[in-house]
Image (cartoon, rainbow, N blue to C red; front, top):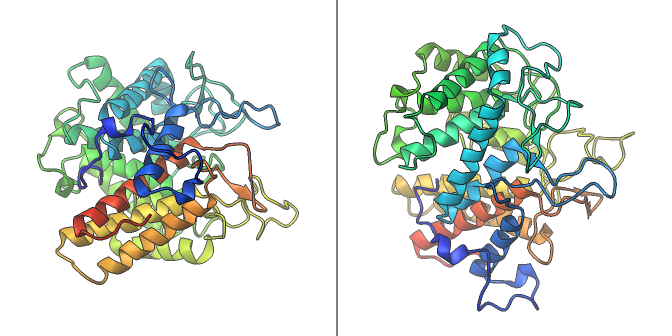
Length: 422
């Protein structure tokens, strides 16, 4: 976790590589520090004045949706990189932007909380995934916006930051507390009735274990059951601001266990399930091992990790989707992060040799595979189809994941006084 490992000072990653000559060398030839600084600059290029990150700079001129807009999930996942380089002020600014957007559409959250079941598109009762980066207006009703993991991620990370001593939410303001309460009502009204959503990939509707896990993690972070207490030096009584009934935690855990190890009725495994391991750590070690095995044995490819078998998004041959799925480099970053986090846990438990060495080697292997498919100037593409990228280069949250993966593994190596994986 970001608080477990020493962070590089934010002043060392200002978005510039002053004094470092990287122009004449490919990204893959740079040192670890140079790679980190170069990758962070590309992420900063996507950051907007209000603290949000556009998904990519693609403006739609070659067809398809334009990606130079806000996705709420992407903002929260991309800004994670700031925690790992010590730039908490930027991360807090990003989350306060999310709060502004939730406040702007608070009326939709209230309407959604009044429903007993999710019905149809429900455009008037759900927060849209895509938002204009300047006006913060919703962009489209064309596809599924009912995505519960967005709210779960928000509750989880804001609680995490507050427990680390960062005042990301003004809990002394009544309007903020009312918003948080209504988000919980919204989640518990639709989720524990086993209603479907569109999940991380905005497809469905189905009941997704990644969505259930995100909601459970968010509620657990604000509930005083001690589940996450080991992560923090000081215990912050978040439950005094937002009481979460024990029933919500128990029913959420039951719902998740019923779904696992599957992602949904139609998908026995899915890349999005890695979120259950990192950042949420909301499943047991045996469940995590099974999910990792399913993904590594079935979804890992040459250029990245496919989202799930038969994925049609940017599929190379939609008439024969199996085997022609788009490959996502961020999957390599995600796997690298998970194995380096497992190494951190092993260090904290007193391990010195195996399996610690194996965890570090595996994290390094996935990091090297990721760097091998990044562009020569250090950008992480959204995906590859038939060995070629689409236009979303870099993809903000994938770029952020690379920074987390590189920084986390570097810190593990520093703690053990071993050579960094360049």
